Image (cartoon, rainbow, N blue to C red; front, side, top):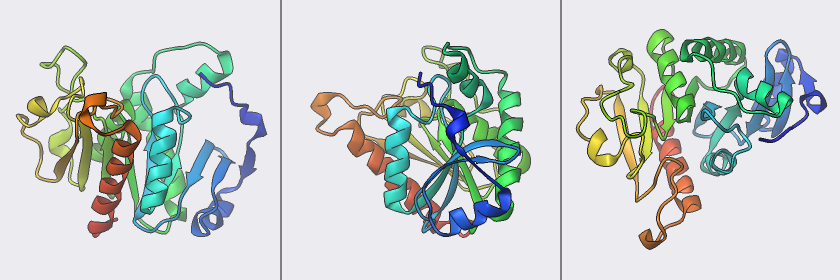
Length: 242
């Protein structure tokens, strides 16, 4: 766990955020009254409020590579870290995330703070747990769209404990990018689910939860991350709301 010093992040007023986003300025700012925000890329295909998984933040290899790939594909990412993860950094020790409903409220706060200053309707998305939180917020309040990376359809080795109760309430375009071998939902498992008509699943060859394939597959994790990012950008760009 990185111990990035939050006090070194430049503070920005919400009015200044609009100029940062419009001009494609990249970096990390402390958004007044909310917290640290990392901005990367220009808004060609859309803007994505991007969350992380349960045990690692935005500095994890997967998240760093995903943001880079999304920027290349034309998606501007607005990356945040939940407060419990930031507390882990400050204290230098691990702690479990709070109840998912609390994270939904935290993400809603970010969505409401950012939306007035954006060029395009804000999409929600994230890795694993972060994607689940994003989907729960979209089911409750609506969203321009969802981009879910490695969605945790069920806990590993517990395929009967599905996390799809809120999915019938989804009305926005929803893309799931999933590794074929993901222990949170393999291809053979997910293809048996009845997902809402707004949802599409795109599969990454031989990938697991971090989209890491086996060597014999002939592809690399970085290649799959860039493939996943291209599919997200294409999906966002093709949707009228994006």
